Every structure is written in structure tokens, then in C-alpha cells.
Length: 292
Image (cartoon, rainbow, N blue to C red; front, side, top):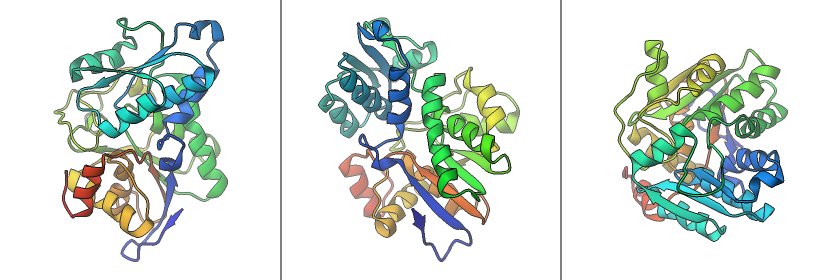
């Protein structure tokens, strides 16, 4: 979808992953991971750790395959996403943020039986995400830059790997919220460091640190990273709703926020709208001109 913005000198296109059946790109990687797992390994079910969207993706795929699913979520996860996970038939397991992050860092949650599907550092998940890059090039073979929200890195690395394989001259950038931008800091310093992290309405992106396995992949695949403020992100979500009639969650507005700030230049830019699962009260505050 092309977004007409007279105040922006370039050409901005939107890749609307918020229109997926679960309202997020996560369905691609989750379904690919489960379809490539031998059926005997799925008998006890599947487990993932997610702020909400990967949980929906794994729950949707598990329901299609007829296997049990449990989703470990942080206590601050949006109710909109938790309700959607439960509607898909999965069990929600709420834990403190530190315990949730530990599950992601260790790729395990032994308290619940089942095979663990990592939301980020799983080759099958990243390959599924990479189909977004292939679709972008099908529609816009002349694309000059792609802006991708960065949570753990599976989306940006997957897209960059696909785009670079077919159009090496295209630039792919990650975008993080200022409230937790470990990749931006790592690229500036030349090595990963823990950063100050604050929870925010951008619940699908931002973290206190990079996953160790993702640092070399992100460093090799991406052309850079940007961080944007919560106010800039809220303004992008508002613009998407008012001008494009697109409902985006916080992380879904990051790429456009960076594009509007001129971070990707003035050429043909694609912004990944990664998801649209936002609590109604948060969207209402944003549309009223506030930042939740």
C-alpha cells in the first residue's frame, strides 16, 4: 500500500502485516516452524514465550495441527493479545518480566510440557519471516530501503536475508523504541551492552539486551538501526489511522516513525507495519493526540 504524504519527499509504501489472520506477521514464522517439526515431537504440545503476537501465531498453528499450546507472557502483556490467544485455544501462563525474559534467553520453560518454539532465534521462524522480503521485491523490485521493527531480531534478519539475496543494493534498517534500544546501542559501540529498558505501549519491541545468538546475525544482515521516541511512534500510529485507515499497534508504527523523521532517506521506502493488536483504550488515547 502506498502512503501519500506531501510533507515527505520520498515514496513510502506500507507492508500491512496487521492484515494477517492473527493481526501480525508472527503467523508466518510460527506456522513454518510447526510444519517443519516432526509430528511425533509435537505430541506433548508446543510452548512459546511472547508478549502476545507470537503467542497468537503459535496458537493458530497449533490449533490447525490439533496439538496443545501454552504461551508464556509477561505480566504487562496487553489484554487484547491475551484474549486473542485464549480464543485460539491456547493456555496463557503469566509470569514476571524477568522470568519471561529468562525463558526467551534460555529457549526453554520446563514448567510446562511441550516442545519450545523460540519466537526469534529459530531458523525456521526467521525463514518464515523472510517471505515478507520476497513479497516486497515481487511488488517493488526497485525498493531502496526497508524499515523493520526490531524486537528480538527474527523479523529484521529474516527480511534482510531475503532482500539482500535478490537485491544486495537495497538497505534494510531496524527500528527500536528509545525506551529499549539494545541493537542501536550495540551498533554504535561495536558490541552488545545491556541498556535501560522501560515497558511502554510499544509492547512488541524494545528489550534490555540483545539475545547473544542474534547479535552476529543482525550485525551481518542489517545496514543499521534507529531508535524513535514514544511520541514519534504514537504520531505514526495516529497518522496510519487517520490517513490510511490502518490500525497499527505500537511496534507497528516504529518503521513509519523512522521514515517520517527522514532516517531512511528520500527514495522508495517500505515500512513494515508488523501488527495491529492494540488495546482499544491505548488507541483511543493516541487518536486523541496523547501518548499512552
